[in-house]
Length: 232
Image 1: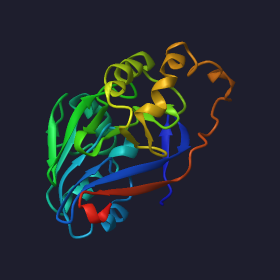
Image 2: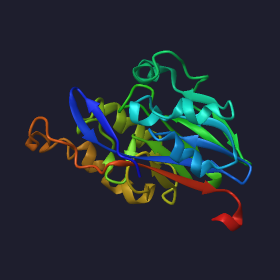
Image 3: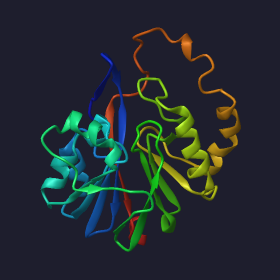
């Protein structure tokens, strides 16, 4: 774990990021490389990094993207609508690949399908892996519900549309692997959707004092998903 702070409109928020490493003994894709490239590359080891995929352009999702990609000259992928956010962290460079809805990435005999899931940012995406029965949801959907920025929902209607129309069409058994917090399943979250639509997410949100710090934990966590059966 490494300490990390994100500044939102002049207010600092402590955050914990999950960086997902998907692959086998030879090659990997790194999803949402947070701020500690050295820690992430320790987890990668000698395996080749084929691609670095950013589900959003927010600083705590792309902070180590260039360093993680550099060793193996891996491509960096981001949705083009999040390019302005990318430039806040990397003003002198651009991602290599502009992701689009229904695009596909392959690693170690499995595929990741790009699902456009905007709301937290205009170019937010999720990555669905049917063969693993898992979806990497970035900030769009977390174990405690739709993700926020600095305690707020930038475009909640768009976010709920993406969650209901895309993510909640997946099987209930699908593992939800977010950029923050613990994993869950589609089946565990879907029963809450009607309450979210009825306003439960924003009801009482004014109770928090201005400038109050987000109660999330410091740090960056790098987690791996190995595709060899003996590594599960």
